[in-house]
Length: 235
Image 1 (cartoon, rainbow, N blue to C red):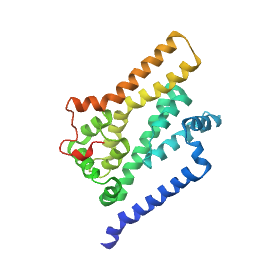
Image 2: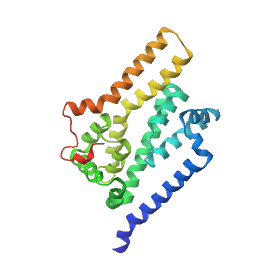
Image 3: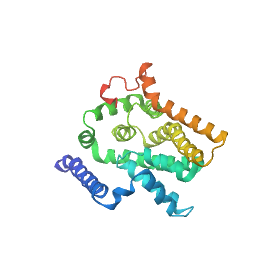
Image 4: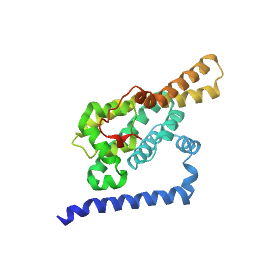
């Protein structure tokens, strides 16, 4: 019984140590200078391999997402380095691997550990995903009223099966991934091609990006509340 109570504490301590190590690497080592968009793009391109570069990129993306680090910079980097088609594919694979990693980490951490990590928001996330199940999670992915990383951890607390979680995540994040990747690819094309078609693509990408950014606000204005009775869920 005592071992069961200590389990989330031990897991949480291990996670804290991992974050501390990452923080040291980020702030007090040459790694810090490599985390900008330009450096990530340069680093991936320097691999000069059609196999190694995608594998390294996907592993980097999955690790960052599992550790609840923002993935937007990596999504943009994927579009810049690999273009729209391959970039969207690698971004999707990396994001979904990372989301699954965070989901299983939350299950290993347990309720107490996740509540220590997310605070009162943890109960709201658990309530939302458990009450609405697959459909609710899909809606929260499509209209990001809840931060991506927080939703990964909150979903791990529920009885939602991993297959349902994975399918909702794959479908839910696809539109946003496509828009971000298309936006990055269009900017790259626009910087090297001054033709009318290239400029039109940049404007189209910018409009899609703006709409995606305003989608959560529009959803709230229209009264969309997939979290129901869980006011602590809103970001």
